[in-house]
Image (cartoon, rainbow over all chains, first blue to last red; front, top):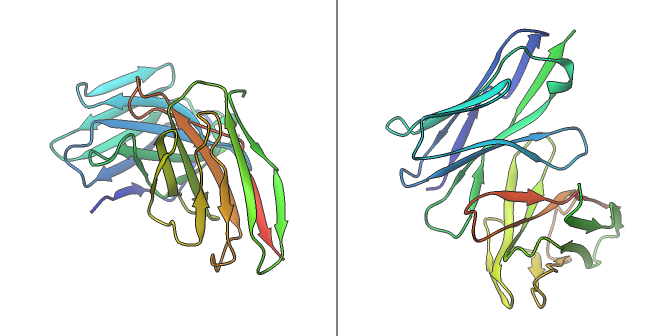
Length: 113
Length: 113
């Protein structure tokens, strides 16, 4: 069935370190993988996404990699800052439904000064 | 943060009451979605609508109902049949021309008294 697993559930790093969050998905036909950042009590905000025709995408300090064969994708944040502290969600577009996204359970990232 | 609005921000319901959550978008998006978020968990799809006058059940539709009479509006009714409605409710919309990318509203926090 449709499923996205996300690890770790919590992540604590020191300011300036890198953070990596990993997700695996079950639908081999999924072709769109967004990452959302949600601050406490706020709406999820799209921070980066990747489509299945590329293996990596970068935007300043964040990058996403995709391994279609293994059905997993990862978010990489370099030079972390305290304002990066939030909950991050990965998602995969389910091929069987129009624009239907299946979300991971989320990773709570804490960046300590 | 414009484009998608939700009201009210906070809503309190007595047991046995139906309540309706509002979602409006001015992005000219065809598709709209309702998600439920519980503490420490990901987003679970309640209902989605690809076009006016059409909607489909998501993964947790029991105890909820929706309508899509206008392109801009997708209200969600939480009925008394929903046994545990206390949660954060998020509405989202997407453009059919950019498959997958969803934009979220600010959310409504519903509490059952």
